Image (cartoon, rainbow, N blue to C red; front, side, top):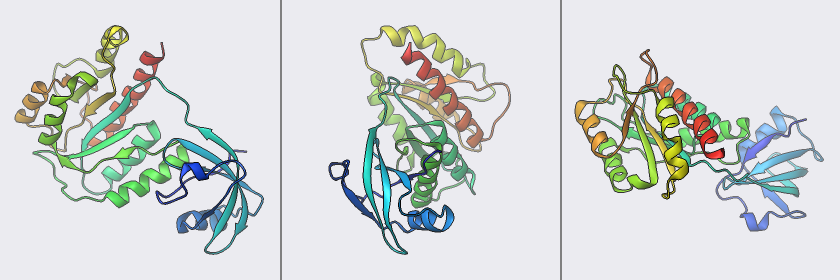
Length: 262
């Protein structure tokens, strides 16, 4: 039977204190409600706890009260080592719950970094970091990741272009371009596989830029080109921003895992 997984708050006990045989007290109200009222777990049952830094702790429930939970650590495990670079999705903040949906799905896919941006044609300008983190936290527990993605502070797209121009050697970057003759993202990644394998420069990030509801402006496309970001296609149909983000992220994660593992 699969154990239920919970992501600890940032103020939980540090990793050095969570060792086999130790006990930890938890007071996260969401976790307590889920364990007691939804899952109806009891003392003696086991759960998996994540510290958000790549460590997993299997814990036996010892004390389970309305406002307090105490558990003993019976096993520890670290996130498996992987060869592929971090996968980053740079996408605009979207109106309504469309961005929330994207956060959930990008977490499930395995994206490492989500960089919200405000582009020239962005419609939504609000920020909901607490909401985004809550969605990502629940998705992390559900899909059995070892840690949630890093959701960065929203920034103007121009600022991101400038940062990419400075450290272009350590990353491979692509910008999605609808209604263009650009090569498909899969083709670009496959064509780059030989260069990646033989390169003496370590690739730390592989990223994709997704346009807002109105698409990228000509100025933004030019800035992307200057910053060394390659134009790519995701196919013949015109996708909503959140759909494009999920499709592109799935391609990046799956193809890069294959390239870096061979």
